[in-house]
Amino acid sequence: YFEGQMGPPPFGFPKKLQEAVLKGKAPIQGRPGEHLAPIEWDALRTSLETKHKRKMTEQDLVSSVMYPKVFDEYEHFIRDFGEVTDLPTALYFTGMDPGEEVSLVHAGREIKIKYVASSSLRPDGTKDVFFEVMGLPRTVTVTDKSAVSSTKRNVRADEDNVKHIGAPMPGNILEYKVKKGDTVKKGDPLVALTAMKMETLVTAAVDGVVAEICLSDGDTMEAGDLLVRME
Image (cartoon, rainbow, N blue to C red):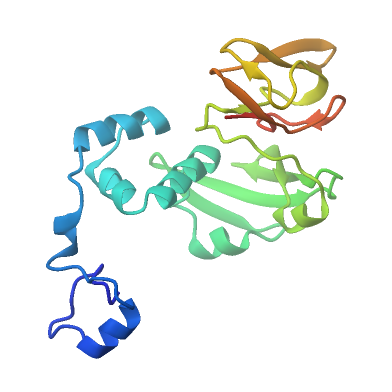
């Protein structure tokens, strides 16, 4: 603040206090925005639309420039859970009690959702949630975040990082074809997986060096678990 990153106050900074805080560092002169590099808006739009696979609004572009990490986290949340702006605030933060029902408007149609019950916790930290949508029974499997700390879960691959090689399906590690430090080319085999008595070979998406083998032969994994990290 005393450097002037947010602009100077109306009557300036107390000089002695500013010097004491900055400890010899020169403050910004003038408006902070004048010192920023110009933004190529068209290139930014193209980059974001390619990364997040949707059309970007002017508000999206500005949000990404000001808060790039938060914007990416928001996009990942929407991709995983969908739009949640229609949910009542209390329900979003605290969830529903068994037997509770909520009405939402989606695409111009009122939808009634009733929470019925949930199963006991599995060793992998997941449980089944039973609910009704317009009177029809539905079931989904979710991760109980309150129990994650006491259960072992594999590291997840970053879908936006081409050097994170994730599992394409749930199953088991049959055999790693590489070891840490190996140099691989795009298309080289990295690890063989097995599921439902079917084998799948995961290959390198880009050239690089194997930085980390994240699991071991025989391990169980879920879709999206990090198998190999490259550099």
